[in-house]
Image (tube, rainbow over all chains, first blue to last red; front, side):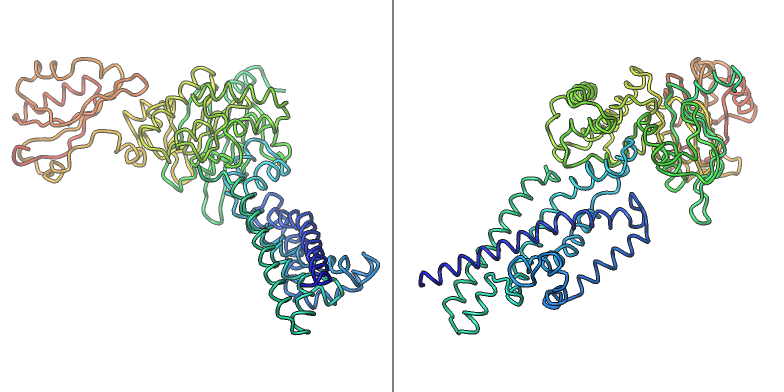
Length: 219
Length: 353
């Protein structure tokens, strides 16, 4: 492999990492509160409000039903408004984040819903308010699932970021398409695939380790 | 303003319920419950599943809201309070649960300290209080453990320590021993009784196990279809259950005529007459059978039964067979009546049983 190709591979890896972790971080910061809101406002939740629940649920479903490649193009005006341009890695992060957030919100919702209702009741019986219940019960008790879900979201974003080439976002997927597919360079294709596999395995391994360390549910 | 009499009365009752009603759809879960819990007593509420026990206990700390009626906790009406207004009040009421409801992500000491954290106490103070309480329940060495590594009995001890953390005026126990084996149940009940005596803590427990109430209850209320059908000191309800539901709940803890004899009982007055005798309190402390044998010689034989002690009161149930002639039977029945025994003729057995 030439020095040029190596540099290109390194740059693409950096772009993929940037897109994956930036959108992942945003999905965590926005998606977790969204997931909490979905659980809290549902019937029997700690802040039952079915109107809010339906509207948020509808928005989440709407974004989740649009294929990412369509979202990437459809959000160009939004991207231009936020980043100032619709081309490049940072421009790709906007649609990636908007796709990742409802995705993670749903995954977080599932984990939070699995928290035993008896624990919420115990916290209420102690005189805890909604914030106490969220901070001391829901989030800590669902933490292993929340971490596992975040790992899944990151891996999904590695895949989704391959389409970022559409808007000049670069990344490993883009490299594989342009060199491996369009130029029939099987060597590059295989190297890129190997790097992607290593990346996904690495993310999964860290996620699993973290989850195992924080899971206190078995003695 | 209250009159003086009423004020004194209200401080003596930690809980006072007036005509509490709650419906789920068309079925009444609570159908006009009026009940007082006195300061320092252990009141047991017993009933079958679906009798409304859980709804009742959950009304007391506002986890459930009644449709109508009044709930007074330490003299203060809590019906109509908002969730936010209920929060400080709930800190005066500890609660323990059938499935313990410990937070799996927190250590034992952090579980115990959580009510104090909610109250806003500093970390050092929380830790000290948590350790004192773990000492009280005999789990001082488990402070840093996670609940998953504890046995069921240990988990409930942590639950009790947690419920006591905020120095409540009232402890609610929601089937706290129903998930435990008999030996562990006994040790938990002993702990609760100790706490009741040492701290003077008022305890209201719901259960479907008569044994639980028998072990630590002072008073018992029997709940059926959302109504209190029977209420009184535990020993007296044990000795003389008035309602069919109380009798059937008691069946497992009171002596019953062995099945093979019951199968041979006939209503026709032929052969040996089988009686059930129930006595309780002072009359049950006197020599019964020696006196009966002296009064009417060769008149009876003991088939089954014995004397139990509930709240330090003797509660006796005997089954005896009468073989003599009519005159001696009448004399036996007459004698038993003078001893304030409740006598029930169960039937006759043609041959010797």
